[in-house]
Length: 302
Ligand SMILES: O=C(O)CCC(=O)C(=O)O
Image 1 (spheres, rainbow, N blue to C red):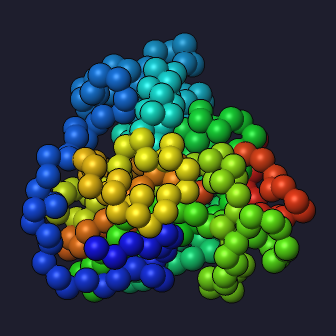
Image 2: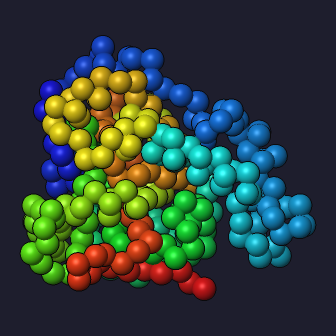
């Protein structure tokens, strides 16, 4: 099996190979609505998602005119935070409104299979700074969090890729500096990237906003729960841990996946390819040490 320490869409291997049936058929798939603790069904989400505005509205309705709380319920957010601590990822169903999804669809060209430097797009920038997207991230990183990098992924019939097991170990910075323990340095789409010290990666969180339903047949993200707690893994460690039971993150349009960059993840080619568009935004909550500077910093709107 080939292993890459850090893979982005540039590095994604177009794979026409058949699935490794044995591996793919392992009993790894959990409920779509597992967010930690007892599994949550769609019907429960309605009950749990009572907003905090006091009007008794549901989270979905909180985004409608007339209710200004814009909040997901505390119970959903607490369960999400617990799952991220334990497993390194969590799915938040119906997190992003139809209006936001449509704005992203209009802003991003579905003919492209990947777009880097997404935070230079003004629509994405505004959405990255919106309460709607910041709320679930801030429940884990705190209110000071800000977006630092964005990538658009679109696995589709023309770009039906496979990504081998890896951790996301690089960040985008303004300039190359000589910092002990940081490296290798590289350039991606004209932006300097580096693998920083472990502590920087441990404090980050990515939110993956799904613009399309993504079932088992669409090449979903797969994660190894708990693997983020092992630090930066060697190739051998990745190979060993990738034999553990994985979870296929199947989601619906408007759902988000929150993930620690260090959680081991991969994805297989879709068996029934169609657009699988994801806006992947990475957040941090502190400035970088040793004079390094984030390439981008998108703070909240309020
Ligand atoms: O969306 C995918 O298929 C893979 C994404 C990925 O590997 C990443 O975000 O590092």
